[in-house]
Structure formats: structure tokens, C-alpha cells
Length: 468
Image 1 (cartoon, rainbow, N blue to C red):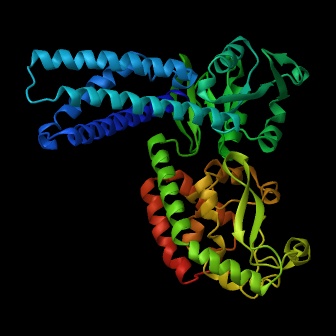
Image 2: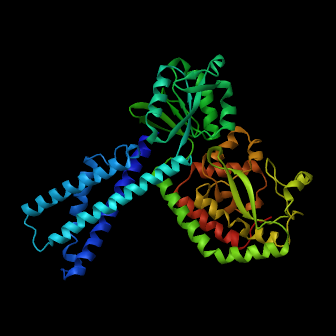
């Protein structure tokens, strides 16, 4: 559960540090060359890999990447200082032993000086960034612990004593309903087994951890299947269960053995690349489409009274609520007229769609036909509430009507486009079929599939296929 994230985070830090050191190398060469002539850069490039190896080993040895987020700025800067001195000494020793010739001493001094300065600046920025995101309540995963015994308490204390893991315990759940309200190690028992569905539906729960005695295995199997169906990640500190589609893997939390059952993608590096893809595409789109934003805004203002943008609460990853942005395509009071149109709903299930909606403005149908009204959602993607590809984000009222198996579509970040969108949008009128397509996307997800769906959506949008 945690080790994979820690390993990825450590590799990212190492990569960033090596890039910063590389930057210091080129800056030092440029600065040294401005004083008087140097040999061409090709004569010095062999110094770069040697320097990177020395810096990497020294920084790692001094604990730069161990519990990074628990270190203060002063501790990190002291590690940079020590690493600079030791790296310079090691490099000098290697240089002396192998009798490096034609290497400017001033260039070497600049190389280590700028590497130290840039590393120090990077660490200060990272510390401030992590403090900011934690202060804003981001970068946390909410955990529900099932069990109240000795091992469950030990697990809770592990989380409490390691804030750098980014876990926040919502509370405990026990089989005995009479324990509700008890305080264990500073956290409350918020319900019994029967309360788990309501707890999952009324709270943002990213993971459920079962820390129970072996005698409870049969008792918790039904709950585990329930979590699997709803797409909630499950960690079991006991034994393996035969699940229908969730992938199991053994992991540990600081030596605490766990079995994890994933019914959503968990390939961290691919998910990281997916996020990079989201940021690059959304940022590029917002810049390139800015003239379109201006023209559409003017057209909306000229054709109907009301705001340019339509804001609506939607449900995101694991039940997170966020504000979705669209260009307004309906009358300003459209929401109040929805109830009177429910009898004309053409969708089967807890969603509402009709052709030739009377609430549409004169320009609204055109904006919808070519999905221009969706363009502001690139901002939602950039903020991290949505992805370029993923299940479409539902309205909270719709989610309340979901069957358990349908809630698993919330186990992946919602997207601008999905299998349903790429397959002709409103040609599909059965909501169950729509959900099945979303679950197929989740089960078969890969970066390649995202790119394929993204490219497939372009002609669908350009030609207004299946729009209503």
C-alpha cells in the first residue's frame, strides 16, 4: 500500500536531483568559459556521468531520500552541505589517482558550487510545496480500519507516527455495534459491519484496511466483496479471498504484512505518466483554445441573459465532490425546470438526457453538438479533479440511485472522454450498458488505451456524432 508509493517518490526525487546537478554542470561550464577560453564542451562531458554517480551515492548515503517529507528545511540543507563537501573530496581523490589532465580547477569548483546552490533551492521549494498541499488538505488518502483489536491499534499507531505516508484514518469499524462511539488510541469507532455501506457512501474513503483475527475471515468476506463491487481498494492483514475481478498483491506497511485487492488500475508509473499526459494536453488546450473561449463567451452573452460558465457539483474519484465547469448552453433557470421534463427522459437509468431539450439557448445546441461546451473542463483536468480519459463524472443525486456494482465506476478519476463518448455518445441509451463500458475501461486500462480513445474521440466531436 505504501511501499510502492515511497519507492516511486524516492526515484522521482533522485531523478530531479540528478537533473538539477546536470543543470549545474552546464551553467558552470558556461560561466567558466566566459572568463577565458576553454576546450570544447565535448572534452568535458565525460565528467558529467562521473559527477552524477558520486553525487547520487553520497546523497543517498546521507539519507536524503529516507523519510524526505519528515525532514525540516535545515536538515535537508545540511545534507546538501555535507554531500557537497564529501562529493568534492571524492572527486578530488579520483582526479588525483587517475591524474585527470586539462581539467580546469575553477570549472570543478563552479560545478560543485552551482550543484549545491541549485539542490538547496530545489529542497526549499519542495518543502514549501509539501507544506502547502498538506495545509490545503491535499495529498492524503482516507483510510477506514475494520477491527479494534491489538493488531488494529498497532496498525493505527503506525499511521499516526508516520505522517509522511499521507494517510488519514477516518475511524474504526467493529463487528460489535455496542462499541460505536468508543475512542481507541485517539480515534473513534464510527460503526459496525452493517454501517459500512453508509460509511462508504457518505464519506470519502480511499482504502479499507481489515486488521481482524482469523476467526473473522468468514464474517468479513461479504464486506470485502461489497468493497470490490464498489471499486474501493481493500487491504487485508489476514488471508487471501477468491475475488471475481480484483487483482491481489502482497505488500507491507513498515513490516506490517498486507494483502491488497485492487479493482482499479494500480500501476503507479503508468498512472504518473497518465497525469503528465493530462497536464500537458489540458495546458496546451487552454492556451491554444483561448481565442475560442473569448468568441464563445461573447456569443453566449449576446444570445441569452446569464453567466458565461455553468458550474455544477459532480462526483469524482472515490466520491470526491468537485465543481465542474462548462460553457452555459441552457437558460439560466434550467435547473428549476428539470423536474417538469423528467417524464421525457430518453435514458434508462439514473441519468437524464433528451433530444431537443427546450431549455437550450439558440447557440446551446451548436455548442453541445461539437462538445465546445466541454472545453472549460480542461481546467478541471489541469486542477486534477478530472483526467482526459475516464468515466464521465456523475451528479451526486445520480450516484445516490446507483446499485453497488455501478459505484465501481467512481474508482477511477473521471474524464473528458470515455468509451461511451468515443462510441457515439448518446446513441447508447441504456445506463447499465454505459456503466459496463466504463468498467471494461477500468479493467482493461493502459496508457495505450487512453491514447486510442483520445484519438478516436476527435472525429466523433468534430462531426458531432451522437450529440443531443
